Image (tube, rainbow, N blue to C red):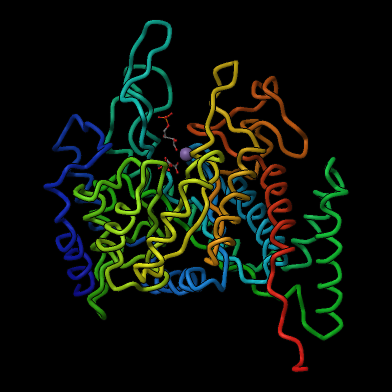
Length: 461
Ligand SMILES: O=C[C@H](O)[C@H](O)COP(=O)(O)O
Ligand SMILES: C=C(OP(=O)(O)O)C(=O)O
Ligand SMILES: [Mn+2]
């Protein structure tokens, strides 16, 4: 009883956001229905627990200190229809395969965080959409309204917040089951990568990295280490904390420590469209103890960055704040250095991660929203080069991906073209890298990281 009381009081502790402007908040048509839903969420069990969030914060502290990389990935928009165990499993294995390659290339641990179990709400650039002369509200993610282009589907429905909670809960259950089973030892993951390489037109390029991993596995086995028993299964979940009508009621206070956590996911981030310093999102995020991210697009200035640090990480604790930079391949080299330099000079100890997706969105001749694989790779390369030039740590990548063979981004090993976008364009929002393109990215990033990794100290001369 005590616990429940304390948990509920967490909600009151963080409702200081409620009087502030909340950008992108849906126009819920029925306040009484919204109230019933938020009451139900306030009494629901937490989806994640404070100690798990703290462990991720420790892992991200290593990223901020330059001792680890973050691999954050998953759908732009999860959908209720796609919350199946198979679909979750394919995303997890794709990310494990990517992580194995990056770990080898960078010689540091890779922290795996899904855009998963809560990524159901979308900020949009336009409030309405017009098709064949009919104008309707835009789709804002399954948490808010329906994807179908009908007036009925597009009405925001707060009951969907409860469906979001249930879909997140079953997705998390699948994640926990897959990872607890420890089904994916390093050798198994490497075998999957070997299969991928065998079918790739770029196998010549990837062979050096794969052969290096082969040798490392042989070496481990020769020393008696058991790569199949290697505990590589730690996996966390994250989403954009866009809907404060969901996050607020799902906030919990740990009765032992008095600390307050968002109980909807291990890590939450603030999107590019909601990082207003005087807005509700920054206020809510300043009150929770989870590790958090903030997206930084091309309008971010060093002043924005310093003020965000001041509001969100005033104690300068590594692991608390990660900047997810999404500038575009053509701007990253110009805009990023000043942001990183000024933040570093201020004494901040944040992590820097590259989102090479959102600054590189374009329209195909067919009207499909798409991205070129080469732009994505170019932004990652630019991001790592800027950090190398500054002597700071490029902390990892944040990508929109799926484990399925969709055709939403062009280019990659199989060189998908614009006509291929008609085959399997299944995203409810932004175009994702498919499984093969995700692995292409991991191998190509590994290639340039491999040349950079620190040489272990040799014996004194
Ligand atoms: O990640 C999502 C999109 O980038 C965001 O929702 C904006 O998309 P839009 O310009 O199609 O609205
Ligand atoms: C909306 C997104 O990104 P951003 O806030 O960077 O535009 C997203 O990550 O899907
Ligand atoms: Mn997106």
